[in-house]
Length: 242
Image 1: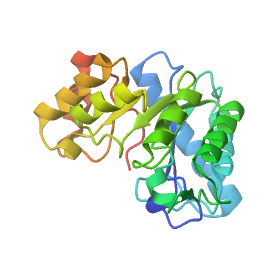
Image 2: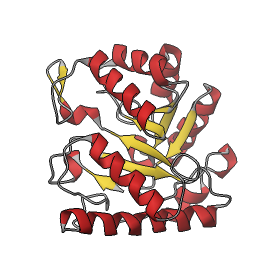
Image 3: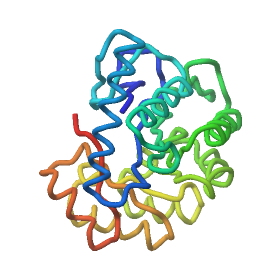
């Protein structure tokens, strides 16, 4: 819905802000809800920023700098579309923290934070907004931080590894043993074969984790991404493709 980081030419260092239509009664209503929120967000962005430019992933890229500004826009768009934030629609973040780590410090766009301070920032965001999921909240090299993040917020939200795990079943199993996350992002093109992708998809629930299917970066038709997870009780991605 909103792009920043490597995906947009704005000041926002967090890379992706998404919606999760968790309160809708069916897939059809979830798709409708996503489209209506996207349309409402466009109206808000045009009204407030006089532009409807989008980033590389099809989300809007307004001239904002902080995650709070992006989340406020999404909450307003959900309400303007006639839905209840936290009831019908929750929020999902992909900070892609590899992109704003320099040395031992994170630079989220409005200051310099160490690992503990960034985790505290996420805790405050979770307390203030209906956040369902945080993907790549820390750099892939910050394994101690991942353990801290999962311990701090893993009972409240989905802590998703993407760059940390790269759809590798062995990495998923090792991360589960270390309690680094509680969900894996699944991208067929990361691991390279359908067989390995399905093994990764099975490894997550075997570890007691969730699995989230990426609706982008696939090497085959969207139908394969939508139907492949069915035997694993993993919902297909829902959103508005760019």
